[in-house]
Length: 68
Image (cartoon, rainbow, N blue to C red; front, side, top):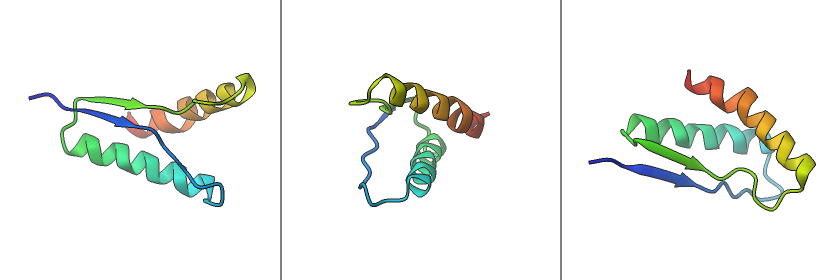
């Protein structure tokens, strides 16, 4: 059986972005360890162009290397 994982990270404005980011990556690692086959992470909703560009750059620089 195949399993997929959808995550829409919601963080409180008072929460440390760094800690929230590390926690989100931890959730993805846990899902991977549990055998999930597919991941869908929603990271750029309700952002302007500059924010989306920064979000995508952060994803490429920090998230992708965590899974190599």
